[in-house]
Every structure is written in C-alpha cells, then in structure tokens.
Length: 285
Image (cartoon, rainbow, N blue to C red; front, side, top):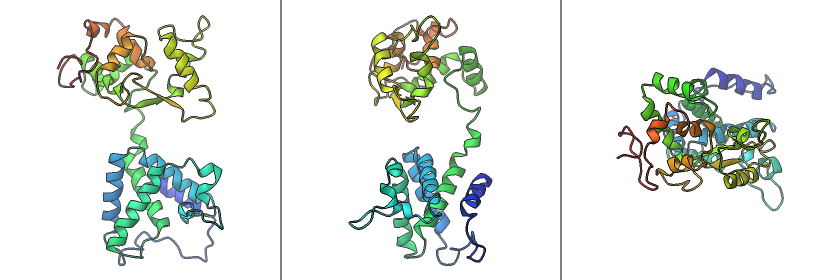
C-alpha cells in the first residue's frame, strides 16, 4: 500500500471508534487466498483498456468515504422507497468506469470465494492498486507541457533519446484524443494587449472553441478534440491542421513556425495516410 494512500485511508477512518475492530491487511488471507492476484488481474486489465479508470475510481472512493465512512453505500441503487447516494445531484457525474471495475472485480471474486469479500473492501483495494499503478509522482517532469517553448521541447525529447524529426513525429500522436480548455484558453481568451485571440488560429476555429469553452473556469472538464477534422482516426490530418491554423495547442503550432523545426515541413503531408514512427519524416512511410 502506498504511503500517500495509507494516509488518505487513515484520514477517512479517523472517526471510527477504537472499540471497533481494527484494519488488518491479511484479513482475507485464509478465506480468499487468491484475492490479491485476482484484484491485480482485473484492475490491470481495466486500466489498460480504459486509462481513465484510476482517476474515476479514486473519485468514487472519495465520494463514498466522505458520507458516513467507506462502506460502499455509493454503489447501492435507488428503489421505489429510497433515493440512493449514487443518485444525489453531486454524484450523478461519477464515472461509469469506476462502477464497472467494482462489478468486474466482485464477479471474479465471487467465482473463487463466494460471499467473502465486501464491495467496500474491493473499492478500497482497487483504489490503492490503481494509485500504485499510475504513480502520479513519476509524471511530473516526465511529460511535455503545452506551454513549453520549442527549445524546451527539443531539450526534453533529446533527454529521452529523440532527435528533432522524431519529436515532430511523436507530437503527431495528437491526431487522436482531446485537451481540456484550460490547456489552450490563453489562445482564445485575452491572448495579448493587441489581440484577444492568437492571430495564428483560424477565425472559424476560434469561434467554435469559444463556444465549447465558454464556461471552462466553472467546469474544469470541458475539452476539445486535438484533431478537429478526424478526431477518432490515427492519420496525418494533425499536420494538415497545423498548416491551416487548426492546431489546438501552442506547443503544436510552434512546430510549423519555428525555424528549427520548420524544415521538417518542406512538403505537405497527405490527409489520410498514417504516419510511421519508424520513418524520420512523419508523413513519409
């Protein structure tokens, strides 16, 4: 169990009376000896297939524990006589991935040791495993930031063993996925004293982004696709977008304007041909 999660668990359980049974990490050692292996198998598979599972499960765990303790009551459905916790207004946005993980884990455990492991313990242990798996402490400094200058990006990727052309190819991964509005809001709101928006952006693109991100300060989850043209297709449209002023992130746009990386744009990439990371130039396969 990670130290940070242990501290978090202690904080949640600090209101428990000392007369009640104490926590025991080996509680299921005899009654469900394969517990840890089953948990790790289900949790790892779920996280690999749905990378948002870690954040989703941690959020569900916190929402459960903050209301009368970590008892998995947030998992109970409403009925004709009672409105359950999960249907409270603040819980309506709890991610499905977290609920799905608990259901999958409970099902697997019931096949091996029926009526033994509680849903409350499943949720707590799954959260612990996921926090250990993603280890947020390793992220800082190991992923490029959207506000990096081109020199900072080159230095960052060089430290990982990539040259400039390979860096441009790796940035092409933005052809799928999305970015939250706060990562590019400075390009569409109050850009500078001379212009409210980044003049490098396509005006129609800006108008659409402003609508999408109108309330981003209130709703931190608001986001836009990195590739507005083919957001769900792994192709070269990302590069075409940058040339047309449709690059969402500032760190992407500078790739086509900075003299250091501009030579990589000496030819126009095809619109649908997938790039290969084995080639030096991303649109030549």
